[in-house]
Amino acid sequence: MKDRIRLIMEKENLTPARFADSLDINRAVISHILNGRNNPSLDVVTKILEVMDYINPEWLISGTGNIYKNGVEKESRHQEPDLFPQEHEIYNQRTEKINQSQGIEFKHTSNQSQGSDNKPIEIEKRNDRKITQIIIYYNDNTFEKFTP
Image (cartoon, rainbow, N blue to C red; front, side, top):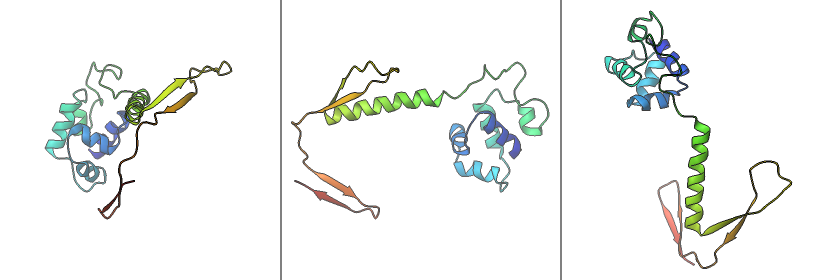
Protein backbone atom coordinates (compact mmCIF):
# COMPACT_ATOMS: atom_id res chain seq x y z
CA MET A 1 0.00 0.00 0.00
CA LYS A 2 2.93 2.35 0.58
CA ASP A 3 3.71 2.26 -3.16
CA ARG A 4 0.11 3.21 -3.96
CA ILE A 5 0.26 6.10 -1.49
CA ARG A 6 3.53 7.20 -3.08
CA LEU A 7 1.85 7.01 -6.51
CA ILE A 8 -1.02 9.22 -5.28
CA MET A 9 1.51 11.78 -4.08
CA GLU A 10 3.30 11.69 -7.45
CA LYS A 11 0.05 12.05 -9.42
CA GLU A 12 -1.06 14.92 -7.18
CA ASN A 13 2.41 16.56 -7.19
CA LEU A 14 2.54 16.55 -3.40
CA THR A 15 5.54 16.27 -1.13
CA PRO A 16 5.13 13.97 1.87
CA ALA A 17 4.80 17.03 4.11
CA ARG A 18 2.09 18.66 1.98
CA PHE A 19 0.31 15.31 1.65
CA ALA A 20 0.27 14.88 5.44
CA ASP A 21 -0.90 18.47 5.91
CA SER A 22 -3.72 18.01 3.40
CA LEU A 23 -4.87 14.93 5.33
CA ASP A 24 -4.46 16.75 8.65
CA ILE A 25 -2.21 14.04 10.06
CA ASN A 26 1.26 14.16 11.56
CA ARG A 27 4.04 14.34 8.98
CA ALA A 28 5.94 11.58 10.77
CA VAL A 29 3.08 9.18 10.07
CA ILE A 30 3.55 9.58 6.31
CA SER A 31 7.31 9.41 6.67
CA HIS A 32 7.07 6.12 8.58
CA ILE A 33 4.67 4.67 5.99
CA LEU A 34 6.87 5.65 3.03
CA ASN A 35 9.99 4.30 4.72
CA GLY A 36 8.28 0.97 5.45
CA ARG A 37 8.51 1.37 9.20
CA ASN A 38 4.72 1.30 9.69
CA ASN A 39 1.76 0.13 7.64
CA PRO A 40 -1.00 2.68 7.01
CA SER A 41 -3.62 2.64 9.72
CA LEU A 42 -7.34 2.56 9.05
CA ASP A 43 -7.43 6.23 10.07
CA VAL A 44 -4.88 7.17 7.37
CA VAL A 45 -6.71 5.21 4.67
CA THR A 46 -10.01 6.75 5.73
CA LYS A 47 -8.59 10.26 5.61
CA ILE A 48 -7.11 9.68 2.15
CA LEU A 49 -10.50 8.49 0.87
CA GLU A 50 -12.35 11.38 2.56
CA VAL A 51 -10.04 14.15 1.36
CA MET A 52 -9.42 12.64 -2.07
CA ASP A 53 -12.88 11.30 -2.75
CA TYR A 54 -11.98 10.65 -6.39
CA ILE A 55 -9.50 7.88 -5.42
CA ASN A 56 -10.83 4.37 -5.99
CA PRO A 57 -10.99 2.68 -2.53
CA GLU A 58 -10.58 -0.79 -4.04
CA TRP A 59 -7.38 0.30 -5.78
CA LEU A 60 -6.01 1.94 -2.62
CA ILE A 61 -6.70 -1.06 -0.41
CA SER A 62 -6.02 -4.01 -2.71
CA GLY A 63 -4.35 -2.56 -5.80
CA THR A 64 -7.03 -3.76 -8.22
CA GLY A 65 -8.76 -1.48 -10.69
CA ASN A 66 -7.89 2.08 -11.61
CA ILE A 67 -6.42 4.70 -9.32
CA TYR A 68 -9.42 6.98 -9.95
CA LYS A 69 -13.08 6.10 -9.57
CA ASN A 70 -15.01 5.40 -12.77
CA GLY A 71 -16.16 8.60 -14.42
CA VAL A 72 -13.54 10.73 -12.70
CA GLU A 73 -11.16 12.32 -15.14
CA LYS A 74 -7.90 14.00 -14.24
CA GLU A 75 -9.22 17.42 -15.30
CA SER A 76 -12.43 17.17 -13.25
CA ARG A 77 -10.87 16.28 -9.92
CA HIS A 78 -9.59 18.80 -7.40
CA GLN A 79 -6.17 20.09 -8.29
CA GLU A 80 -3.74 22.29 -6.44
CA PRO A 81 -3.66 25.86 -7.72
CA ASP A 82 -0.76 26.87 -9.93
CA LEU A 83 1.95 27.91 -7.51
CA PHE A 84 3.72 30.49 -9.61
CA PRO A 85 0.91 33.02 -10.12
CA GLN A 86 -0.21 32.51 -6.54
CA GLU A 87 3.29 33.06 -5.20
CA HIS A 88 3.71 36.09 -7.44
CA GLU A 89 0.47 37.64 -6.12
CA ILE A 90 1.40 36.92 -2.50
CA TYR A 91 4.87 38.40 -3.05
CA ASN A 92 3.36 41.55 -4.57
CA GLN A 93 0.90 41.91 -1.68
CA ARG A 94 3.63 41.46 0.93
CA THR A 95 5.98 43.84 -0.86
CA GLU A 96 3.24 46.45 -1.08
CA LYS A 97 2.46 46.14 2.65
CA ILE A 98 6.15 46.38 3.56
CA ASN A 99 6.65 49.40 1.36
CA GLN A 100 3.60 51.10 2.84
CA SER A 101 4.82 50.44 6.37
CA GLN A 102 8.28 51.77 5.49
CA GLY A 103 6.89 54.84 3.79
CA ILE A 104 8.45 54.01 0.43
CA GLU A 105 6.68 55.29 -2.64
CA PHE A 106 7.28 54.00 -6.16
CA LYS A 107 7.20 56.01 -9.33
CA HIS A 108 7.05 54.22 -12.64
CA THR A 109 9.39 55.55 -15.31
CA SER A 110 8.84 55.21 -19.00
CA ASN A 111 11.50 53.44 -20.97
CA GLN A 112 10.60 52.87 -24.61
CA SER A 113 13.53 50.54 -25.27
CA GLN A 114 12.10 47.92 -22.97
CA GLY A 115 10.05 45.25 -24.75
CA SER A 116 8.22 43.76 -21.77
CA ASP A 117 5.60 45.02 -19.35
CA ASN A 118 8.23 45.25 -16.61
CA LYS A 119 9.04 48.88 -15.93
CA PRO A 120 11.94 50.09 -13.81
CA ILE A 121 10.87 51.87 -10.66
CA GLU A 122 12.43 54.69 -8.76
CA ILE A 123 12.32 54.55 -4.97
CA GLU A 124 11.49 57.75 -3.14
CA LYS A 125 11.93 57.59 0.63
CA ARG A 126 10.16 59.79 3.12
CA ASN A 127 12.58 61.41 5.53
CA ASP A 128 10.07 62.25 8.24
CA ARG A 129 10.56 58.96 10.09
CA LYS A 130 13.41 58.17 12.46
CA ILE A 131 14.67 54.91 13.95
CA THR A 132 13.74 54.72 17.63
CA GLN A 133 14.93 51.25 18.57
CA ILE A 134 16.85 48.30 17.10
CA ILE A 135 16.49 44.82 18.58
CA ILE A 136 18.89 42.00 17.68
CA TYR A 137 17.78 38.45 18.49
CA TYR A 138 20.40 35.72 18.90
CA ASN A 139 19.97 31.97 18.41
CA ASP A 140 20.55 31.33 22.14
CA ASN A 141 17.23 33.11 22.82
CA THR A 142 18.85 36.33 24.06
CA PHE A 143 18.53 39.77 22.58
CA GLU A 144 20.04 43.25 22.75
CA LYS A 145 18.25 46.57 22.41
CA PHE A 146 19.87 49.61 20.89
CA THR A 147 18.40 53.10 20.94
CA PRO A 148 19.94 56.02 19.02
